[in-house]
Image (tube, rainbow, N blue to C red; front, top):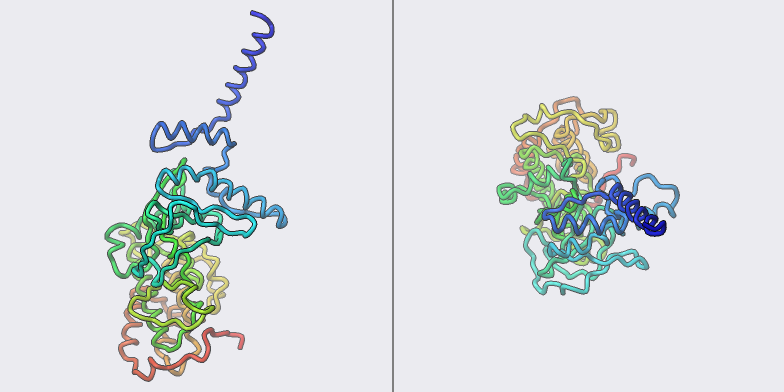
Amino acid sequence: MSTKLAFTLLSLLGTGVYTYRHLRIIPMQTLHETLLWTIRSWWHRYPASGDLVNWDIGPFDGMEDYHRRELRIMDAWKFLTPFFASRGYFLYVRNLDRGILDAPSWPPPSSESSQEYPLARRFRTPSYFVFLGTRLWAVRDRLGRELVIKLVSTTSSPTPEFLALQRLNTPAARSDPRNRTIPVLDFVTWGGLVFAVMPSDAMVWISAFAVCFRTLEDSVFLWEQLLEGLEFCHEQRVANCDILDQNTLVNLLPGDVTGYGVLDLDKDCVFAYIDFGFASVVPQDMSLEDAPLRHNLFLETRAGLQGKGSTCNPFEADVLLLGAMMQRHLRMVPDVFPEGIQLMERMMGLHGERVPSASEALRDFRTIKGKMTRAMLDHKFTSQIWNRRK
């Protein structure tokens, strides 16, 4: 054997050993896909990480570092485009010049216009999608319907968000009219990552509090739905733990009003909770009172809740946070709605009494509603937000 041939064989062997050492198997549903995505990932130096942490921006050093991290995650989504297409989901295309995601050229958008939940009451075909977060991407399915895909978990270590979405999207749960959460249409997995597919209109509804409520009746309509939705989640032993204004939506698209203005409520208007990224999920046979205590940083920042500590029963924390949200939008009418204000204060535990459960709060709210006169319901709001500093 010549020296040159020996050197060539040793080089090939060394390359093979080096490659094998750095080869990471990408587990897929079939052997063919496993081989395909293992080789493709290795060839492209593994742009799509199997670690959820790497799908977040994380701590950054200046805006240049921030944009570098953001582009790295965008590259991961682009890398997965063929995979999602094989599942019938066609990703929007990033437009770096405009900072948005452009609609795919194919398939064409559906010509159907639906006003039925979970879609918005007035449907429009979007031509672009704002990049809202590193774990969220807009897609269009084979039928031309607008959807979003959200990274929610890994298969090896299911996150509370994944467990919550599974529990809230069983056939029985989805058939319950009290289920005021955004539906998950599909779960897809790639390389141990779990993605949830949801209607995109559900993600571009406007905040429930980005509109102006004209009368107390409008506000009562809102709070009854939110209390009812919270009761349902707690029956499923799911605590949201992140009940804030921005995480409650109404099914009206921003394009339906000039800016943010008066919302005409009707029987088709639906309010919903979103974002279960901080959720707590306990066994369904566990008493709510026995749920493990956990830290909730939002309790430290809500008006009226400071000093209560940040470690709390997660189901009680939901009621506390919803009470604090009610305070922000209802305390302006204490003379008109005194019993409602008293219930709100009980939900916030302002006077040292036991915080009611969501079911108890809903029951008491409906009792109060039943005693309201037409003059009370027709009371017009002169302001939308209570400021404790005024």
